[in-house]
Amino acid sequence: MDDEYRELAHRLFAAATAMLEDALDLAVAGQSPRQSPSRLAKHGCRLRAAAHDLAVIAEAATIAANRAVNHASDQPRNRR
Image 1 (cartoon, one colour):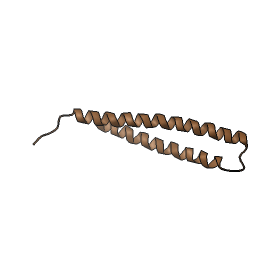
Image 2 (cartoon, rainbow, N blue to C red; image 1 turned 90 degrees about the vertical axis):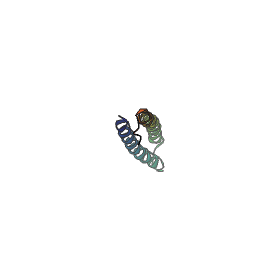
Image 3 (spheres, helix red, strand yellow; image 1 turned 60 degrees about the vertical axis):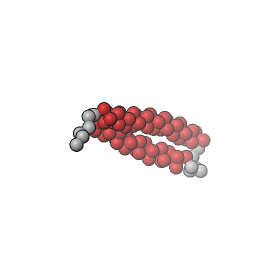
Image 4 (cartoon, helix red, strand yellow; image 1 turned 120 degrees about the vertical axis):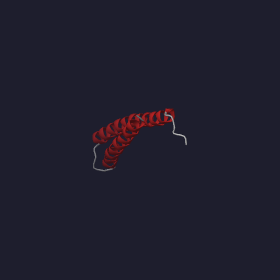
């Protein structure tokens, strides 16, 4: 079972990477002097939403990784 939690954590980190790339695009777009104030506000709202979503993904990845650790420590170990 810990392999499933580990795989889930890896997938969540991959999702976080994609979210960070999207957030980077928003941040770069917001630096353009050609953006209107309303467009900047929209970028800001989308960036805030991305940060919130990223926090949720990070929490889920932490939980999955901890479950993998806890599950692995509950398994009997082969002793020689």
